[in-house]
Every structure is written in structure tokens, then in C-alpha cells.
Image (cartoon, rainbow, N blue to C red; front, side, top):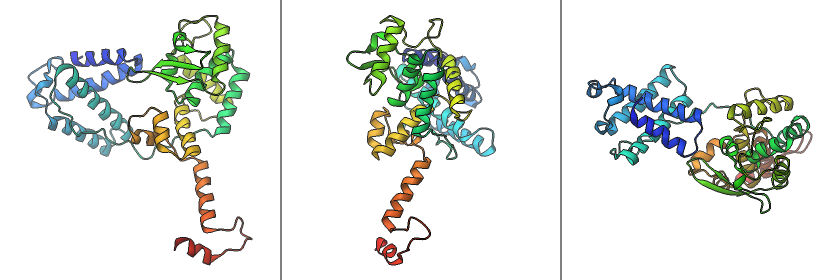
Length: 320
């Protein structure tokens, strides 16, 4: 593996990224290095010895075109190409900052994600049923409520929740400090039932240091263990078999927008740096369609049933 890729992975770990994420991003960066090794000007060197100081803006642009061609030929999906391009550009920005690489990225952006992603987003009543299942079937209901509750009520990423330490939990003041994506420390209020739930969980564990979320044996809860527990509750709740814990963050953004209609507020509370990132987390649900139909019906004064009177004049006037 190229030494700059190794340094990139070390940087990701220092920012709190988990093992699978670090390895995956490292493989993507190394794939880019392997592709560079096929270019005439780099072929005289071993891939591990390629000097990126010879890299140009046009080389990176050509690589993005290669990814586009793979999508068109069916070799990869739009979403996989989008992820690969974004990570590759992130790796090159890291190289510029760490090793003084020239700006070979400039105005380049990652490839867009496919428009056909059909996310299933649970309705509020389905979220409520999920937590009822947790309280009924979980061997550690307080812990699992706090874990999944912070993902939905605070919009946290699964990895952020798993990293909670008791040193950062102020159960009396109702606040929690945690290591967020990008290696930044965030402080958020424990809203709703979370404050009392964390109090109960701390009493049960009898400690105020160390990991908050652990297994029955007291070990730190892994990402794989969390997925296993989530899948059990989701199955009992009747959720789709392909749903994952990150659906809570998507539901947080979607439901918040439904209630407020304020994209900027959702963007700030989800801690997104760009509005177009927030757009990927907000999904059209059945409630969106219902709300749109209600608005149209009120605007055009449509009858609520077929047997009602249809006022064509009022419909025409609504557009005048």
C-alpha cells in the first residue's frame, strides 16, 4: 500500500473513524493509486513508490471520467461511483494539506448519486412501535433505548452514538459531549425521555467512566453487535429486512422537515456542512403526498368526495 494511503488511514483513525470505514476508504485511495500505475508517466515506478507530485488536475479529471464510463457500461453503480469519487477527492485534499501536494482537485466534485435510491423511512407511529418493542423484548431496555433514541431524537450517526463515554454525559445537566464525524467534539442536550433514560442506565451500570454502550458481558459494543440487536428489534417491529440503524438519522431529517418546513434548521440540527447533503437525507414519504394533496385541495377548493360540488370557477380563479 502506498505510504500516503497509510498516512490517510491513520488520519481517519485519529478523527474517530471506525475500522471498517478506515479500511474501505484506504482501499478506494489505493485503487486510485493502482490506476495511476497504468498511466505512461507513472509506469516506471512501483505503485508503492509513485510520486504524487507529478499528478495533475487533468489526471484526476480523467479518473472521474473513467468512473463515469464504468457506470454507463454497467461495471459499477451510480452510487458506488459517487462514493469512490468523493473518497478519492478527500484523499487528495488530505495529501495537499499533509504533504504539500499541488491543488489537483480545484473545482472538481464527486459524481452525483443515483436518483433511483428508494429509501424506506419509518413513519412516526412505526418509530414509536420500534421503541415499544425495545422496552418489551430487550434484555437491556434502558441501554438500547438510549442507543437508538439518540440516533432518532438527536439525529446522531450510529458510529457517534457507539463512541459515547460516561465522562461526556452530564445526566444532571441533561447534556452529552461526543466525538462527531471529522474528529470534532459536539455537545447536545438530552431531550425528551433521553435524560431520564441515561440516568437510569448509569444507575444500572453503577459507573461514571468508560463506555456507555456495552454488551451483556460488559465489553464495548461493536458496530456488528449493534446491527444484530437492531435487526432483531426491526424484525419484530415488521420493518423491512434491508433497513439499517442509519435509517434513524434519515427519519430524523425527514420528520423534522415535515414538522418545520425549514431546510436550514434541518441542516443545522443534522450538522451538515452543505445543504445538498441535507437533501440526500430528506425523503418523500406517504405523509408528504398527503400534505401536498391537502394543500392542493384547499387551494383549488376541490370537493372532499366525489359526491361534492365541483366549483370550476373557483379552480380557475385560484390560478388568476
